[in-house]
Length: 344
Image 1 (cartoon, rainbow, N blue to C red):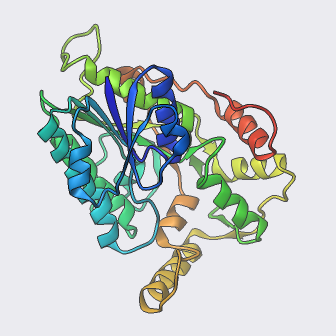
Image 2 (cartoon, rainbow, N blue to C red):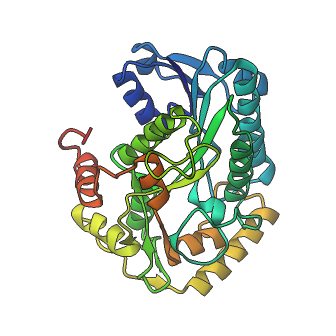
């Protein structure tokens, strides 16, 4: 079968492409950065951004399943830039799916679509999508998720996955940024340091995507049937390792394993949020580049609980995290030290 992966050269997307190739699938990738190594393995590369609506629609020709992992990610930026990529790009993809008869679309969303400014402890999918957030990323991802789920139909079955803080060997974002800030002495414990947070190893996130496709292949099912799967189409699922950790204990454990000093300096959530508001104002008024060192959204993410209930994913997708936090962390440390093969 033919499969399209948007963002297939990114961290999650590439790992997903590699698994699809290992399963003998024909794969096309839509992205901005060519990957000669994937092309050498038979991957058809379509060089385009999500903002190129005609190219996005055309990429769906001859495709049976679309994995939509591409997005504009970040905690800061102009709302219009995020909207064009995350909302209009997703809309063009949905149009392409309908035009070319794509059967299934698995959309990679984010738990931040349920941001409400407070802690999330054992949160489940009953929470409403955010309509007010100081970061454009959750707002635009919530709009995109809503459109994807609304598009679900017998002709095009859709669902959304919400992986939280994807990490693992080869991660170019989360862990490198933490390490860089720690080594520069710019990392502070925000809040009391006891907040619990869920993460998900990249290989577990890939498993969830493949299970989602399998669930969509089963058809509509029956909500009332005790045996067999419940419907997965038209729904969203939180995806984590199912092992919430004390965030700052995990970060300091990782630093210790790499021979780095721990983060000990603290700042209250209120002070961090106030600093974030000041930074946001400065970045709006002054011609400052890059992301602010602190934002209100970052302060909330670093200080409060963010862990999620996996009951729906376990029951309706058959999701069971294979790579534990301990095993994944050990493998990550080995990778950062340049030692040993990857887990998978």
